[in-house]
Image (cartoon, rainbow, N blue to C red; front, side):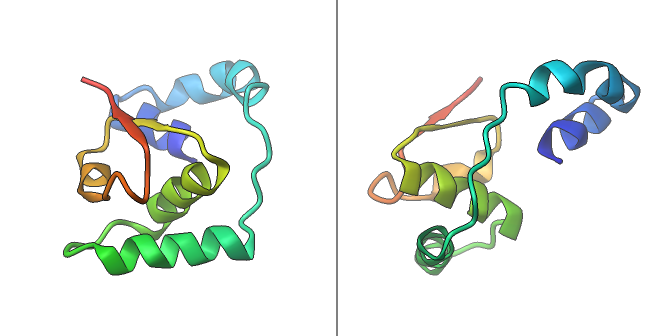
Length: 90
């Protein structure tokens, strides 16, 4: 969903069907567990501003998995480094 949305924002949504097989092969399943849901709530409670729910689950999944979140979304930067290791891009 995020990949398609980014392509759409760039005016290239028609590239999705061509590019998804290659990108999709790199995606692993990371289930939304109770632990991920709890971390998403912890992150949300720590913020003064709202972050879209889907992005909270993305951040929480990275956090619980011990992985850095690499992103271009400035709203992730409001999340404390105690809750999420992240690497903003450009």
